[in-house]
Amino acid sequence: MNQNYRGKFPEAFELAHEAVELLDEFAPPNVVASCVNTLGIVEVERGNLKSALESFIKALHIHRGTKDSLKIGTVLLNIGMIWQNLAELDKAISHYEEAWQIAYNRRDTNSQIYAFNNIGTVYESIKEDIDSALIFYEKASFLADSYTHSSEYTKAALLHNVGTIYLQKEDFPRSKRYLYKAQKIARDANLEVV
Image (cartoon, rainbow, N blue to C red; front, side):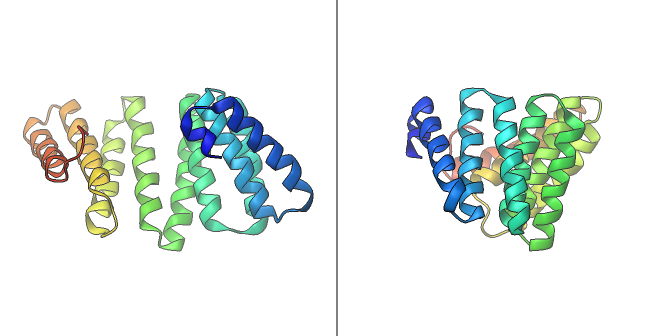
């Protein structure tokens, strides 16, 4: 499926679709579900969100049958992203919360960080609920800071999110403190602008 990352989306989609058709008959369900999820990713890249959603829902159904909680959580995050992009914010939050619960039960800190951050982005996009966005960004930032495997980019991006919310709340001293921390981490790690 490397075609997807080279920008050859039609070719990647055709390859993934053919793989699903071939594998659907004889491959283990987890392999079929992974291929269907890949179809969804290619459709997202092509801008076909409704088709991507159909693929992700199918992948989720198959993964639920295999009880693979890691894959279920990943696909739930994908579905939440689609609902968020389609401005179905309650559905997005619901899927992100379910993904977080699975990550929490698995003690998967990295997935918890992504789920909290994604929930924060939904609340931030609502605008009138930046307080809730701040809560989730701070939870994500706290987890990232205490998790030894978090990338510096993730830490900086989350601190930037928190700082941006404080800026919207016109709490300039806190905003400055968080944005400065984000910038320092990015600079120390030789990262591009967060």
